[in-house]
Image (tube, rainbow over all chains, first blue to last red; front, side, top):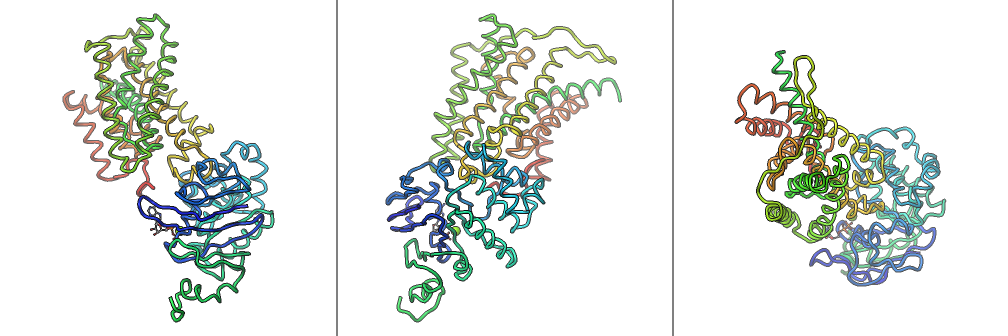
Length: 239
Length: 292
Ligand SMILES: Nc1ncnc2c1ncn2[C@@H]1O[C@H](COP(=O)(O)OP(=O)(O)O)[C@@H](O)[C@H]1O
Ligand SMILES: [Mg+2]
């Protein structure tokens, strides 16, 4: 349902993505892996219109969204949870989550969606009235994901959902992504840890210096020599 | 407390209400656009002239003129924001170009007012006559009207920010523009409307003060300076901060003048500003961290 074809992005004069190909099917969970600064966040920003490509094409459910303004993505069924949660710091948890239903269609169903999410995320009930900033990192991540889901997306994109979380919270977020996916929502995310990634992902892409290196299904792709070199930092295989 | 002190406090509240209103409008613009709007005083001035023309030349009753003039300034400010400020913001190196641009707009509007309406100070009749005599105090009803109007406008704006869709868009855009856009908030349009809304508040301040200060091409300059002080004092972008800082500044200024003399007015105001910023660089209600 999401197709990126030969996508190139630059910030100012610096090109950071080179001919990126990536796809996500209906209901699929896809991981993007790669070292810091390799362009994972930029791929997500390109999809969302925050970093529009200067070459290549992006389509979603058959429609071209390459140049679609950021604000219009959510109505098409794409939600992005930005790196570091990015909650509105002085709003309450409840206000933050309701901002996720800003789009007119989502606003109509907001009450019902909120009830559904309260089942999935106990933190929304327990801490609804608290200021977002006062929550722990893990709780903030839950709220950020809930806020993204308020728009009832078909594709949920999570940028570094496990970053800075304690192992127990990582496990909780993993469970949550599984639960979300069980509702038929496709998930695209990135995570440094390959094993964590493949504990949820159906497929994965490895990116290095803004280029596709390898993609495939399951931990088997970790045996690929390029991955061992690039990603796991192992020497030996010829560069 | 002596009667004179009470009288000065009352004057301070009146002054503070205007500062609060001016600061509230300016902080809304800063919050959503991250632009120091140096043309802010000229929207105050345009409010004064629009009100003057509608009441004296067109003979309109003042409450109607108030509303119509506010709508006119709102529209003019929206066009300014959409046509000049927003396009500059979209370009790299925007922070300096918007300062230059709003300064340019400020000078252009002052000169246009001078060319069209002349340099003469024009007075506007009181909206309400009479004086309230209570406990030895003499307070003209016009001054009470200023406080009441400022209070209603501030409370109304606060309600819009808290409870409407537009208000939620403004707050989200101010707190994290990128995150807001990702959620479908049209941040550019929201900023333009917030700019116009803030400018209309300045225009309304210009109108309710016109009977006391008279209307001239330069009437906005001192008030805009105070509005900047109030916004910094309250914490850049904080609506509540601007309201509290405005009231505080007005009262300190009025009482300070009573204890010294009126030449000290500006010195007292800016001494308060510097003292607070010394201790709390982020202002009364600002947040102790860099703005994302
Ligand atoms: N706003 C930006 N302006 C300029 N360069 C950027 C910007 N954001 C990211 N970059 C650069 O683009 C490259 C890819 O960054 P990013 O997509 O954030 O990588 P990742 O998410 O994989 O860590 C990095 O070299 C980074 O320094
Ligand atoms: Mg990143």
